[in-house]
Image (cartoon, rainbow, N blue to C red):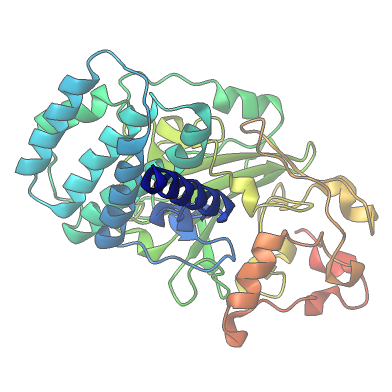
Length: 397
């Protein structure tokens, strides 16, 4: 009897001590290192660049798969069969990058059965890793790797490849007086004009970033294309257009609507505008407006020689203007551009920066990027051109 009482007391003490211990927070998943993505790059919460190679992708995917294996997912028709076919395809895949793409599409389908909190946290990160896997595949094989039809069928079934192309985004942009650009190709530029290379490549210091412009003869404003890494396979090339009169801006990426896992190499292929992912179809949780903030959409360093040409000329195109022009007579609190994009992509008012001259202060994310650059590659802030009169930075041709 005494033995039972002692045992019961010991158990009660153990339970009491266990209850008094603080609960250890769950270890963050490796994939959660990714806080912000943009221009094909990933950054952590302190805006430090995260190198993304196939080993890192596979490790991040595995950490997410382990979480999902412990998470109660809603039963979805055909999920078990789909998972079995994806696993079989992974066993036969000819490259680690292709395995990563297949893993991504399986995770994508699994996330459809998760609660909203889990989907919101991980869906956009997973989509980014899928796109990076395809970019790495294209780079390693110089765009010549042929994904089998069997794998393509799985990607279609998983919602990564769309069969229908139908959008009103271009019409919406024109309706807001935003110039809508012609197709873009570095090898066959047509009306696009190369203005030079960036001196300050904030996102990828030291790597090339070319600046191309197009001018709409009917609409005052600017279209700027920014192909990176010489436009090769897997490289990023974005296009942004802004109206000088309405202050609206539109976004396009070199990911296609039909196959958003693949980036079009602008050096060798044509970016057909109607086929590109845009401000309404790009991943809602990876907003371009995370970095593109301010009075105008173009993140420019006014003292950069190439940006100076865009801002102050000489450019022969009389309709070309990189700013929302009503702000030209406003020192502080002037108009700010408005993105034509997902409703959550916003450009909130920020404190006027650069000693009250030139343009609005950049977002905290951009300032963190600047501070992390080597001193020789850091844009001068405030700009030299802001001395004397803020309009010196924005004189248009």
